[in-house]
Figure 1 (cartoon, rainbow, N blue to C red):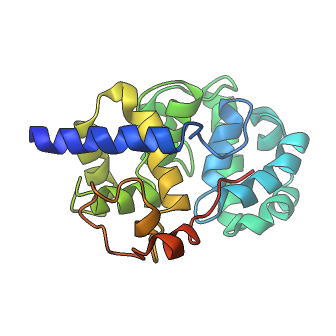
Figure 2: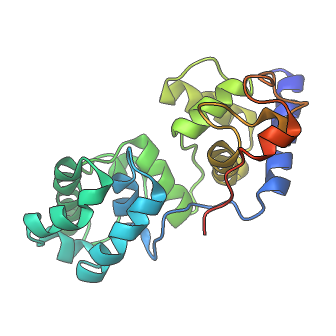
Length: 228
């Protein structure tokens, strides 16, 4: 890895840290189990929508033991708005059952164990490890993949390739907060369609500057404010 690449990556991280000092996981959760379930539900859905359904879900089924015994039709009713609710119901009831049967009702704290649970891949596992257990990991969600390519950090959309390439640029102590910063920037400024290049704090660093609107006034109007 070239020193110039690391310097650019470090400067990107620093500027995003200044732009988004409160960057964090935007799923609502109180414990590792709630974060695990919410992350599974968030696939192809918005965090805001997931947060709406998990209020009722966790009020009725607060832990793995409760959710593992929940009537399937009730769980489907509650999580219906997030989409793919039948498959997700199978996953969250299934992972709850496994947690009860094999992990004494507690969410396991290692990658190898987490990925054995129904509906849990590396991305979901890294979210849980980073935000519930403070274990460093790279979460290659759609925003990180898109922005890592735009920043010139990687030339691939394969999650495992992105995970490895981005991880190599930073100390593991930076991985979790870096992912949050990049995801926040992707949601607010560097959109998939029409990034707000003219209002971007990285305009002089980004090799993809000009992909979107460069007029500062028009670009600022495209910024999506942080969610409440």
